[in-house]
Image 1: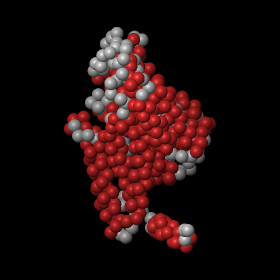
Image 2 (image 1 turned 180 degrees about the vertical axis):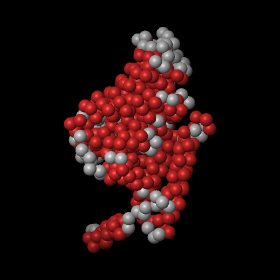
Image 3 (image 1 turned 90 degrees about the horizontal axis):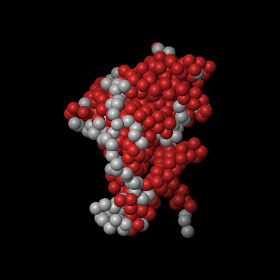
Image 4 (image 1 turned 120 degrees about the vertical axis):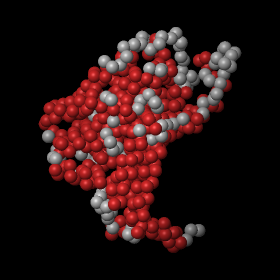
Length: 474
């Protein structure tokens, strides 16, 4: 029989560290280090790391390496300083929060990448490529088709998953035409970010604004037309640079492998699960995505156990299995292994670096200075420009934490700018960073930068459209 007294002591022992941490955090507050040598050194480390990221095309140093080192150095300095001042628990608590934020993002990305890889292995994108080529679409038509699909899928899925899907199609259709792939990827990033801006669950920043009840669910859709403008303006300009050619004709007819359609259905179910978990259960979307990974694991188990149905019985030729499928059984862990791990590690470095700079006090300092000195409209426009350099999640988090007094129109404006501002640079959004990894060597930082003026024109036009159409919200 369990001794209740012993059980009570055990539970109290478990709670003691948490209670002590809570009391310590109540007594101590983070120290403002923005004017210290530590703060200046952290900024310098971050800038150097990002310069190396931007130079990846020339120095061939994978982008994850410098930011991982920078994150360790920044938090190492913070940890040393707080330890010397008798408050190591504050730094520990802060870095754990940042690591939790990264973990949610990493697992979300990992599931999305695994599904994309599974569909690629089942020849879904090869079949789509074959269908598009057989339909006679030229590169310009494909440029618009993939952009429009990205714009309308991203509000339902998320802009990152949408961009990964459309980029896979572009890579399959584009072949060796690097110019088309570059322009199509830029268009996809702009379209996916614009599409996610008018939906409460189309982007993490819109989710944050919605969760804080700054804007109600249906009011977000007032941003639909400004988002369309943001996508169409740069796409119309880039249209004339897209090669006026057609992909090389081919009589090849590609059949998807067994289970492909079911995997597509499971992916849609995974998206619905993630949205439902968040909207109706109040749980993080990543829980729904991980549940969806479970769907795929069971599907993989079924495909492996029934692999005998895929053997080339009709053709009797192991080198040409045809529509019956591959000689190699489906392996879910092989799909996981093919995820863009460099991209996932890059996000670790970015989230931890920016989180460290925020803990030092720079994000709050910038936000407070902007809203008090420049006014809400100018500040919210600058937020979008900042999100092209610094991840929009901590920037929006800083704005929400400060909670400036603004009408609904201004909250819609900052939602729009934070969502689409990341399109200005390839490293400004999760979609852009992921596509740099997926289309490595074909979609690059400088390839995107060449078209930043056209994207900036769309950015300005979308803001003007919002200020005009949604004047009643101001």
